[in-house]
Length: 454
Image (tube, rainbow, N blue to C red; front, side):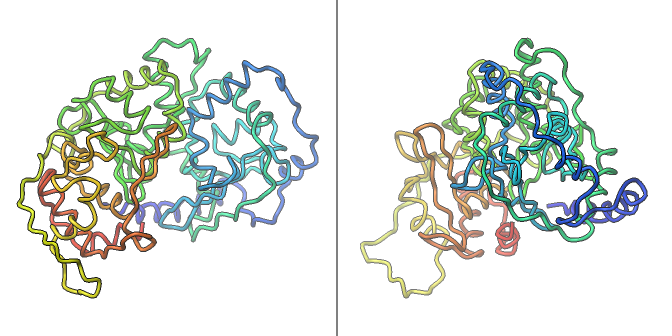
């Protein structure tokens, strides 16, 4: 896994110096700038369109498509109240309260200030947001959608009177003014004009993919300053331990063997039998956003992604969902109960039997109702990259779509079922990939330990 964050640290040091020359120094959390004092002294923003139900409905739809909920809501927390920790090598970026509470949230934001934050990454007090907030993508939103989004947040989101902890990154990432330099170097989406609801299907799909759903934020690899590599659009990228795969039209490295209906089903439910299941950040995208889009928008989004030019993958040279078959190894288990005080190292087959076979079946075929997926014809197991398989075993799956709850417990240090060591997970990953996937990749305990930290 390339350590692009070392480069980022060096860039930020240089950016901090440039930023000091370029703009005002960063303030402490309790300091007030002239801009922020003016914002506090100003009267509360007007309440335009409080009774314009069409505009408010549009704003709700935009918020869903932009997936605001996923980052600004903690598990079991109040919607949009913030507090979610987004891990980076320089510390946790903590999402803010974006409810209309005037003291703890964005209730005092004018429409212009809201626009500056969402599309340009500038807070009401003039400080720069960190680009974990995908403002470089939201920059492509239309003025009409921004107006609707502002109206919805101000009039339909329940205010929450809590302030999340302040983000406190290590130097030099704590120098927010360095983001001014980053913004000059990073490519932002060009704002669309007109009514996005009247775009033709392909243009609507492009708008959804690039401006609202910000697919490239995860699925496009990054350059040395962590901007998206535009020549590798949707070619796959690292994401806090997970790997957002190549989703171009390549039939070997991407999803070229998927139909448009396959992709729509995946975005709507988080699963396609014989292909893939969503977990991690993608599971959240499905739960909070794509599962709630209209069928017309899902088909527009899928059609656009399907026509993105094919990019061959650096590692995957055969469709990830084309590997494997049921396991036919003889069952050597005995009726003798397992002793919990037996400290002998288990074989990979024993680890599989003890922790996976009860749900996925000993042959790896899953359940007949497909509630538990097959381990073969499975893009996670079939990928030449073990990243997502390791992360799923560590962290499990927790995806909710309507009445369906896809859940698999993890086997990490917090597991309430079984805690597997780094060596045991490495052995299990190698076994699964050899029996059901692309072949053994010789994952080591040391590699699992790296993923466990993430």
